[in-house]
Image (cartoon, rainbow, N blue to C red):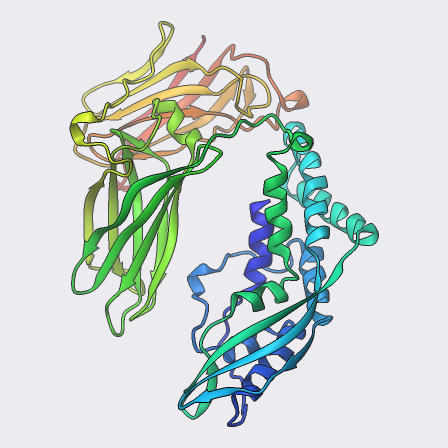
Length: 470
């Protein structure tokens, strides 16, 4: 669902350098041009009328060709816009203009489409359907709902703030109400879906919990003459996942800066997550680092009490950058002190299989994880424990993998900094199995490859074949 929503929002926010043209000396003319561009879903012309552009780094990589039916539906609703631009209130080089708008509210169709698709999506997940098949199922659902569903007309008044820039009136930024009009109030339909998931009629078996706002607020992670990076806030949502809102500020006048958090060590365990943003000179951007409970569970982490963030900031346009920041910053989001934090012990079972334990690293197959709560389409995932004992950053992977004699690629690859440890639930691509499933691990053959992650030309630290027979 998030992917589908993201694509539509991406279409709404396409970045363009096209000019608005000669809009004349009146602020009303700029607003009229903007409203007509909304009606035509001409994002380039809209952006050109704005002084504050959408950041290019807010965009997603996928285009309108994906889920085209949804994009076309939003465009059609935009074409039905009618509007009246009222007289401007001008105060020197600033102005305020209101526009009365009547638009098509598609939120009921959006809600009904995603509600119907959720049921199909669960079935597709368990049947091992491909992404293309899921996309086709969504398109079919949308087409059916559009044909039989009902939209309505809605009225709103949008206020535009303008300022004179180089003798031309520019709208300071996209009003939130205008985005509602442009997308046909789609966000309300999506919000209604989220509310519906808590109801008795939308029970898919997922347990939710009370959201938690952590006490960390406006904690500065990095601050120098070039950049500032701030942890704005942190929270746990109703699904048990975590979001850390981070503001990145570029203080330079002529350099695009790349902000990245490459690794996070949480309560002593490396956790898969990633954050990156490119910020233009003299600008700031706020985005979120996400961390999923499913990535914390293998290590037994119940809350992110201590986070060691591997932060890098450098010239985004340089192929061989000199790092402005290349450091590890420690934060305590939940408010606990260092003395109160307990690092979980590594997972262990009496039947565990030690693949390797040498001066450089330890690699252990702890055992099979219970099936409950994971989507492995058959036997549960394999629990693995890894520790890097060396002074190098090591990369671990499995190759030439066979489960019960059938080729099965693992969803696994781990880069582990020096001295760090990690726990993973390793599942497999089961597309080669009959009915896309297998009941138990009888025999797992694999080649463990370990190399220096910063020197791929060097000889592998390990490249050996093993057999795991529970």
